[in-house]
Image (cartoon, rainbow, N blue to C red):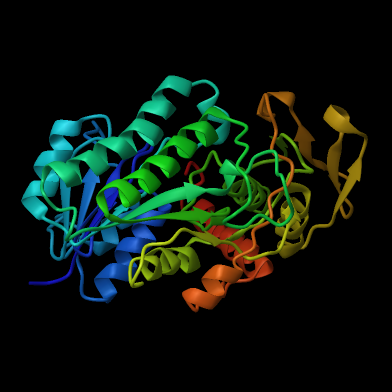
Length: 367
């Protein structure tokens, strides 16, 4: 029997699951990279997608046996939802995966303030539904479970850098929901001896990042400005600092966590910190523009040194009610126990995202 991975990915755009042997998942950016990674290792991958009136599998179409006809090969999709425990039991019982990767979430932090109840239902209770489905199907002793945890658990940071033993202090409904998910995973591990781990992943980006996340908003806007399709765009907190890595590197860490002898939780990060402001500056630098900042707070603007044009403004609507100012991860444990380390540098990440969006906008200005 082939390794099966089940991947669950839940977002406003779609959901998916992955498992080893059989693996379910929802198809967000991490899910697409994880599916590629597992298929290359010979897994049969099962993913959960939510029903939609339009196709929501754009990130994985290239993984079909026949992309034009959406013919399935070693990647198989199932309709499902993290808010529907019956369908989770049905799919897991049918697939009987050996690994499950739960990447499902309403993952936009700012939007979680507007959709707090939904975020709690999917990100928090959805994880419990999935764990209960494993138990109901009698697979506690045969499944390994990965939970996509988040650096947003640290929120108002209690120490710098943040590691596995750093106290949590979430600052958003998203972080609070993920905190419940984290502890219910620990509880199932201790109460039922389930091989279950939390991957506390710091920010990880790629050209597949959703368009309404800040890094992708920057790369898309810079690409449009470069092509003469846009003059200016607005951002929120320019001085928020994050530990940014590449999603492709981070999905390898997910898999490595499930290949260990004993289940443990791991922080995955680069250890480097960069501000939103720096991401903007490096993105423009890649297209030959130098951004000079003028003004303060909401009146601050980013002006092109070469042309004098204002390309960046600040809008308070993009601020969160409670901000997370600084996140920096310490992945020493992962380096020592998983032999994992990030490969893609911050500069390489920025360049890849801008280049991909220049190509995208050149072919489809309305993308």
